[in-house]
Amino acid sequence: MSADLPPCWPQGVARVLLDTVNSTNAYAALLSPNVPTWILAAEQSGGRGRRGRPWLSPRGNFYATLALQPIETPDLVALRSFAAALALRDACIAVTGLTVGFALKWPNDVLLNGGKLAGILLESTGAGQRITQLSIGIGVNLIAAPNADEVEQGAVVPVSLLSETGIRVTPEAFLTALANAYEKWEAVYAAKGFAPLRSEWLLHAAKLGETITARIGDTSDVGVFQTIDETGALILQTLQGRRAIPAAEIFF
Image (cartoon, rainbow, N blue to C red):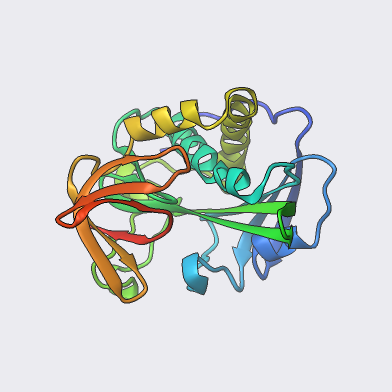
């Protein structure tokens, strides 16, 4: 089964289509784009996820990076991870026609039927309080996912769009849907700030109001996931009190 074609490519946005690359984030770091630029690769030889972990990259899955030159301070630039997550969810709905099953896992994952479908990796270059370039790397398991025994114990089991929905989507078609969806959320962020992104993200948050584990290095905190604050930090109600966690790995 194939999905309908997404809308036309957004105006004022460039794209680079590659066959094989070390990683789309590494390629994006070599660019100095005057306009937002998407880099899509059919295959990555050195793809990576959070904390430098390898990201398996078989052909047919989605590997892309959006290269931007933002002007905000680093804390505000980082909030674009939520714009990317919302855009990813919208793109999944657009290419499948399905409106249920997709959820957002703090800080940077998209789930489908409880399994990990996609991940986001933000990397920036610059000095001090000046960011010269932001790379938003996105990987989506369109047709294949790693085996459960290939991921960290306790982590969410990976799934693919094809296995969960029976719908086959090409990386090029998904890129067009994602680029359009991201343009929408970037415009919202530019006009109204983080508040509307925060509200929309919370509507689709996985495990909101439930007990989760936040792991930072060798330290773990267990508590109820209450919300995210105006900085994007996770608010966890633990036995020791309410904690704001700016970065962690989440298990449930």
